[in-house]
Amino acid sequence: MARDALHGGDNEHPVPDVAGDQARLEAEILAKLGTGGQWWSHPLGIAHVRPASASALVQLDSHTTFSSGTRYPRSAHALDRLLPSAEPGVQVTGVIGLRVADIEGADLHLTLSGSACRVVLRGTPGTRWDVLLDERWHRYEEAGCPPLWRSPSLTDYESRDIHGFAETWKAERDLDWLGSALLRRIALFHTAGSAYSTRSWITGDEWIFELDTVLEVPLGHDHFLTRLTDSVWGLALRITRHHCSCAEPRDPHERFYLRQCTYHLTHPVLPLGGLQLRFRHGHPVYGSDIRTTLERLGSPSKWLDRVLPTTGSEARTVSHRRDPSVRAEAEAR
Ligand SMILES: [Zn+2]
Image 1 (cartoon, rainbow, N blue to C red):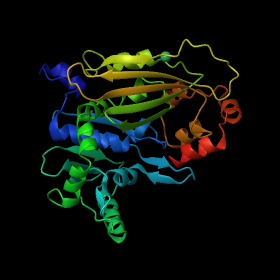
Image 2: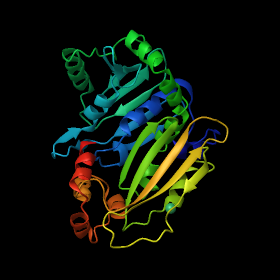
Image 3: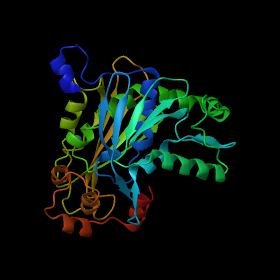
């Protein structure tokens, strides 16, 4: 897309911005798929994104691994997070208004009720989206949680949820442009960052990303921030406040040391909402042998050599294992 834009001279931005429903759909997908807490071959389980002016193609990784060691298809995992169903009297889980527009081979075309917006989730070859969708439909029905994604219009459950949580709904809509722009640059977390673990969530009007880097690797947050805010390719964000603890002295023998540099970024014009980046530097927090887990999931070795170099890794992961309660919590998440 970028190459075509550069060579074609059509004046289109190499990473076009979108708005309205298209931005909401992309932001909701990043919010649901980007929580992290599990391992995939790429950060957040997304191998790459191909953005276009009115749609986006999201290539999913093949599998995730549960703490028990069981492998689970990323396509199924994505549906578990995205498909809307109602817990009557409580809330709607999944993306409100999400609808399946089409299935073409390994491509699942998603849209929003009453909209022409489009995101294509591409599974690995052989992904049977129809089977996965049917399984979930019956499972939700049997559990007494009406599945909603086949309804042509917005269901009463969904409308009530929007009105019942109006403030949350509005705060999240103010972040749609950000979520969409980040999804369209998802590769940054793989190519420009030093983190082996990426997690994100929304709190109030901030979209928070927690990026964990091992001590053996330079934190390098300036490099990431420069790429993220590049004047041509990046997001229209500026740093409004930050706390950098890189220069603080530390005891190299402190086993549980975790340093965090926090950056808050906002749009120069849009007044609401923003991005908070937490660059954390310390011994591995999540799991005891992440490199092996990631190797088994097919992570690119070039990336692994950069973010989890092997030198001394065995000693590191054994001797610096954190206390069991922290590990249990991390695995539960
Ligand atoms: Zn710093």
